[in-house]
Image (cartoon, rainbow, N blue to C red; front, side):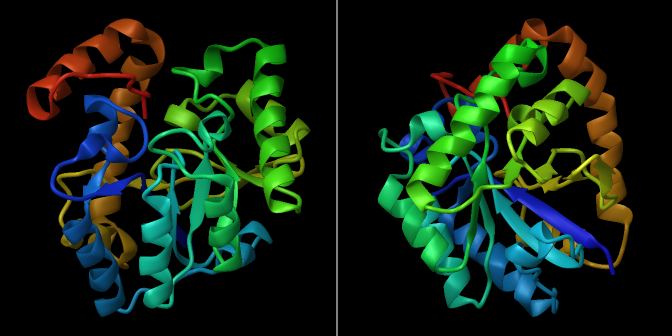
Length: 269
């Protein structure tokens, strides 16, 4: 059995997309309605998905289905409670510069998530638009400040992280490893795990607002069709996202603006 990691972000009700996490249309694309999200959880249980324990994954056991959540929006508290009610635990990756700010988790929220058995990790300090374009010093600063902030809050070592925006590179990985990260999640839709030095790199399959529970169920299931479809789409977008830079984000913002409204303070996912 291999590890299938599903990547979620925020969960909100009544189309109040800006209530939790980053603002704007690009961020809203990755946020699920509460009713839909709870149906995702119940659907995964209904198909008999074997849920991975976050601590076991961090220790190197890559089996089962792992649910992860990026950004550190305020909805993480309710999401964590919903998972516990269903006997599940997940990984919450936090943009530490936002801790305690409107729409994001507080230090007390993070401690409560940890007490409930969830794993709390880094999602960088400021969530740069393209972290792979930072120089070496700035990269080290992003990971170091984030890890130190979380360790101060939690009172324990933090060795798990996810790459903001999916902008993975060798330099991003090296800086994360130098900051003590031993398990790094990317946005690449794959079950393949690989290692560089002392750091394991794991992919994830993204769930977006329009995805019905059947999508999560298919990704977590044994069939590879849903996973291949996302992998193929991701590999088409990858060079555009990486090399087109701001023009790509501008076009994407305009398309999503037509669906979700005015883009404000949006973080590229």
